[in-house]
Length: 195
Image (cartoon, rainbow, N blue to C red):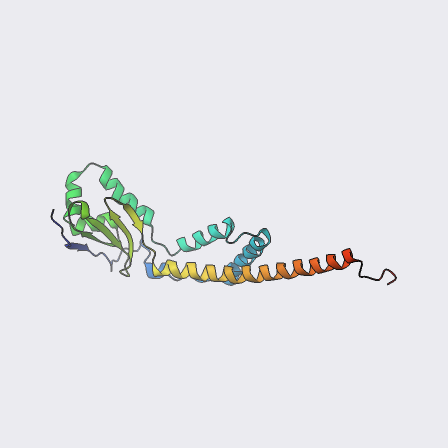
């Protein structure tokens, strides 16, 4: 069995194609005041429902992260389309990591590396910042790799939510405790009816 760690690379950054949004432009995500308010409202509702990170917040988080995420579905689609076309000569070019073919396959501003041969081979897809965004291996299939921008958005949203949820739970617990004390006083008859 022959094992190879040979890498063939196709880099396709620094293009003049204006139809492609560069990741540096996409990475300018900001946690706005209106978004913070929306997160606080969702956290308060979830605290009342005794649910941490309910569906509405998870959907919001997914939508915000997608604003900075590479279009992985399109990248996977391009590769799958090529594989399903039955064009073995094109697949041979991928195996040989023909630079032009990989550029056409993954598009700008992405780059790709083809590693190894046979069952140990893999394709790694990188964004223009050199961050790996996808990996394909024969036995496993596609695996997504989170970018720094995506991690930062996740962190900002989760921290804002956590703080708002914690505050809401504290307030609810205080209200419940006060209500419980009042019920105890009334049930024990420790009050003056003449007042």
